[in-house]
Image 1: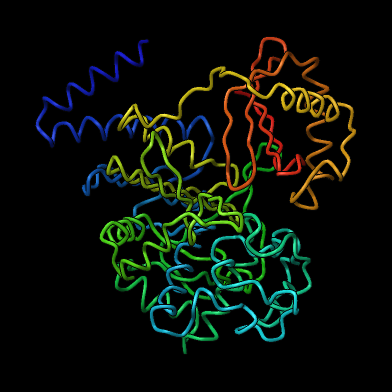
Image 2: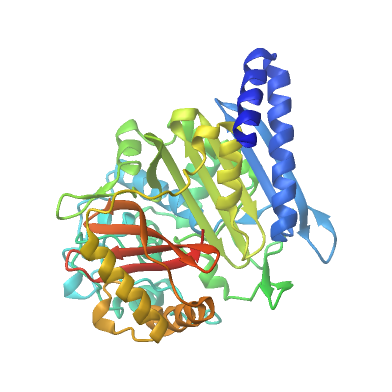
Length: 464
């Protein structure tokens, strides 16, 4: 109740105060929140940008870009993009579409003629929307080895198809690696040159660029990982892994604020192209999945929320646009365990309490047979009795890694209380169920996805 009263009082202050005074008060609240969360989470360095109705409310660095040299984070500090870079790959590809060099309906075998014959039904659109069925290469490559463009392609050719093209959505970095190579092959210049000349420069992103170990790059941040509770330097990977289209870029907060302005103006691409980029993909069944071309296209309180996150080499990034509220938030961090989404959600709730993630609460359970099935699944997990036939479309390592982890977690927690349904949603053809379950005095969140044939496509368990 106190938080509600505080929010209402502040809302009244903002309405009555002069615009500059209201912005200052909002900036101070956001600043205090970011500082507190950075300290709580132990993040070495952050850059945070908040834009409200076209005006920059906050653009600030926190902590250190480099711990060894004591270099503070500023708005010019360069962070690695991680998968936020996918929206730039999608933009580079759409420039080729507009130039008539590529069609979204083209089979990828047009550009990769040595690909397996089974790839013929896969289109460029499928690569952009993670609906190709091509297995994700993450965790499978030798990260110490340098690969040529052709070797990357041949590595991906050997990965099994997980489902027919368009059947479902499954995140695949492989598709975006191929898109980067495709741009290289059709543009008359490299993928990174396309970005530099046709995306970054016209967008006013003055320091955004590809990653290079050899180049002297001003304001480059160091990435860190948490090992046994201690902050360590990020692991080394070969240079070739930082040239691919799945998210291997440097950008600063200033760069991302320039990109925000370009996105807001729908610059660089035609309106038709932007409509394609920001439309949820339709699966073969006709059901929609909330992902466009390098963007998640969600909603919050019935209003559009377009966003993406990234993680790579000790960096975590998030960029979110709450369109109905004219609010955009950029968070760049240099720790692998940082969770920039927590900062995004906290800041959004400060700007507008209605944007806060609604707390889970019980809802009517009209499918008791599903609840009984998922209660039995929880007990099988405790017993370590997972079988491959119970799951569909999960990564290979899921059974080997997640099974023992959740088994150990449940054995420590002790007996589970009854499952209380808190949310039921549909994504594509999958049904997603979220339950609240008591373990002693603690409430946990148990989330399971089920395919059309009732196999498990998602399994998570976390403290509520």
